[in-house]
Image (cartoon, rainbow, N blue to C red; front, side, top):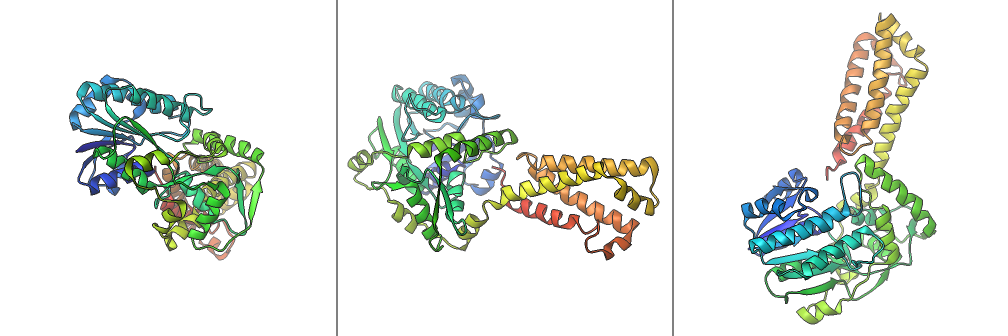
Length: 433
């Protein structure tokens, strides 16, 4: 079949893509940022589309007519509202419009990836919007399936799963909030396999299934098992008060205005507090298969040195961003507050008066702009490149004008080098997704 997968480069979507390709289906991936995905999954036909703009059946029709799919798998979703995201528009309005377009174009099969706590009276917009899309699909004329996975574990690490690994790899002590909340996990391979079985007609249509393991765990137990999976020795757990989650979530919410979608936002913290629970019996009774337990999932994706490196260094990226922003903004403030040392150096090189002031204050403005630009996700890469370029230009210019400054290991020609090195490291680990 030709299958359109929404959110095809996400944690679940990419697994669904690979499972579908492995079983002979032709896959069309839809997303709004497909440049990196098209390189990672060249066997997929990629369509650029923003669900925020696809809120009517008429908007969907040209896309669907162009690729002529036999089925849809919706793996898309956003955690909560932000500058670029409206949860109800993306998870409800766009999906309901897609369902209507499928009915018009006779695209029969539709698999919806929902969530175990998706109900109309849930206390998060994420869950209510998922429930609204589920209800629209359930009342449609399509052959539909609604799959509701628990806490998804995957060989890939992205968003919340990446943060879980980083938490499990913390040195000395494991700081955990909502430690006693109960969760059930599911392997991403089981979710992908379930979606593919629905497409292949193995599973009866018009059914909802919770995709969760039979076992239950506390959140702390999941973190501890992930630490053991990473091959790290046991560490004491620091149970943080639940009240601490609120200010942390508020800060994470604010970072969305800088383009960052932190897994510590209010919705994620609230969902963990509620627990991630489902009923595994319906899927097992219908298909005769049991979903992998947490221990079995981890055994089937052994951790190597790259997983340990990733987990230990995951929090390096925000630390680098903050360090570089602080360095460049601080140099700008110092230059403006006390320009005499810089003006004296320029005078020794024969640059005085208005020209010298233009160099000092212009340089301070550039430093400040770069320090602020690196804080924003969309300008981070360009800012880091500019930091390296400005540092090289500063070193070359200073060397030509005042080569004697290199004799001082703490002199102004040496000080920017660590910042340039940090910018290069940030470029190496920057992720555009």
